[in-house]
Image (cartoon, rainbow, N blue to C red; front, top):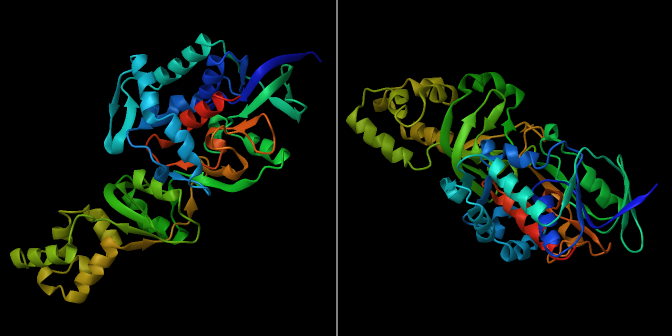
Length: 394
């Protein structure tokens, strides 16, 4: 079979793959991007409700999970959120800032993808879709790729194939399989930024709350997040739950504060002075939905007049509403996860180049690496930064 030669082949036409391709193309490298999907940048298009939360105003290593928490610092400092924002501004893409520094397109995620594809075209990058890779072989130097379309030879091979999240968008374990083929260590993966599900005993109890959203502070171990929490028929979701899910471990409880801004014992005492004959549920309904209160709190306390509340009752209410200890059953898994936590062990890679320390010419970028960001544009910034770094060296 005739072997088609390229300087660089990138597997994966997502955020990190396209970024690597652009930067390699700028250096005059002959670049081919291969993807099994029928369209480039599918996850870019669906992200942020179709508006693409493309980065965040505040990027720090603390916003990332990794077995090696220092690994991401080099890439994030060398291609920053300001560098990517400058690209967006150069293409006159209108965008806006939401809570917590999150940046979204005003119009559509298509603007970001069009920008990336335009850059690829400008620097002569070839993109080949609908292509399955059947075999990867190392040679000296470089690699041979056998695919459903042709056989290719390259000096540098970049794995930008993503993780396991959202398989309906084409996610596969391909990147981990390549890593394993070359004896690279892999940090065990699990779904991140994903809803949590009820234990069987809680499903029927909390089912009537589906659709209710409340602000909350949720804690797991030393990790604490504050945002909205959403009750669903399957369990809990909303930004605060997605954030904590990346850290949560099966079998462990989470702590939920439904009234994070209230000194509940003091407030109840004041309410008791003002309206002693009012029921507890009536007064607390000023703070939380009555339906939630009736399900979460003991029935005898809910209907009790404030004047009958004893110190023990108040303490119990505070415990139930401000330190609700809940043990989820599981996560919804990769089906709805926004990111894969874990991946190719950072210790096997150069933080400067993203190249494997033991396999010259082999690079890993983006989600396939053991670097996972918080909700809010952090994972896209890791894709841009890690792809930029690899693009300087491939």
